[in-house]
Length: 124
Image (cartoon, rainbow, N blue to C red; front, side, top):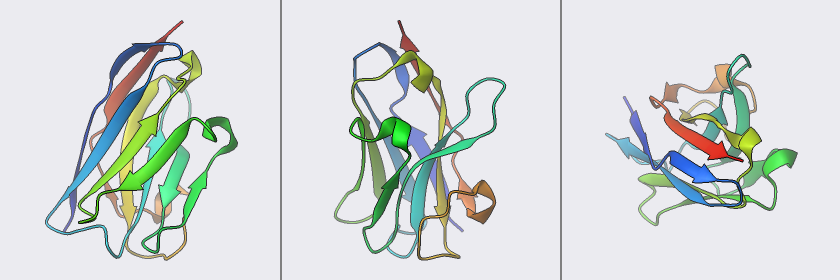
């Protein structure tokens, strides 16, 4: 069983930066695909960025060039560096991990473990 704990959310002005962290307890991410999702009010939870256990990454177009996903060397924590934040990035952000696939699925149903979420609010 893997427990995921996110941290690092907060309130920031447009153009600012935040770094989110997702810590795994009980296991490492060494054989997991890990991703960040977000869910704006009134919308479906959407995929933002993911990293496979082999190190491949995938970003949705809206965050390319602004967000960067990374892992620590021990692969116990996944980070999301968010730069040049925009008001439309406002949402709770959720960390997710999948043990079933080796690629980076965009569908939330293919992820086995979820964190509780951390709120990101970007003011204009």
